[in-house]
Amino acid sequence: MNENKNRLSKILAGAGVASRRASEDLITNGLVTVNGVRILVPQTLVDPKVDLIAVKGEPIRKPSKRYFMLNKPAGYVCSTKSINSPTVYELLAPVKERLFTVGRLDKETEGLLIVTNDGHFSHAVIHPSSNIEKEYLAKTGQEITDEHLKTISKGTFVEGCFVKPISVKKVRKGTLKVIIKEGKKREVRLLLSDAGLDVQYLSRIRIGNLVLGSLPIGSFRELTDKEKDQLLGS
Image (tube, rainbow, N blue to C red):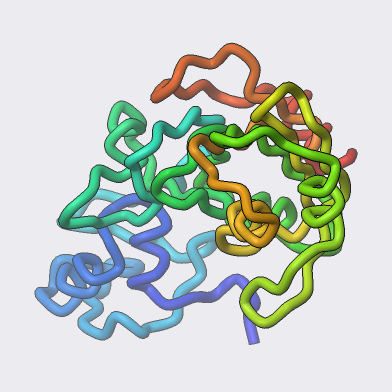
């Protein structure tokens, strides 16, 4: 079997032609050809490196790989569609390629979010074997005590799995930094909640060697080649 072959609808979506569902409609409506032959079945396997794929007579182009860091504001969700809340993709509207987030931040958490259209890169960053640290800055309405820090350091259960932070450090009266590796849903919030702390503000400030720095809230920029290489440890 040719490992480069994939479903035609998936290839169109990956090339940024349309969403997966819309790509299926283009195919079933007879608007897509492969090597000059009209294809009507979205599940047809094709090889984009060999086959000439065209939509409405125009050959599709393989999208260039894009890599961004975004300073996510609170109140935004990482879903592609949301009825009640704005999505991070609205902030990335100037970028024409179809993008997806590398992992997620919950709605009320701010900070560093990596966004790309490179699936291999995304998988490498989020896979547990990469052991990439995530650092968070949290602010509470309480005075943080040694007992709080000890409780957080002991870990907790998240989604049925026991997780333990790499380090917990008090920065000032009601502010601390937490470094984790697992990155499970709402992990830092749960760690602090189990210690009796009420989280008023939470921001991810680092992923591996990639630091959020002074990037303004709601803004994004492209990653440099050096940043990408350092992130993957190459």
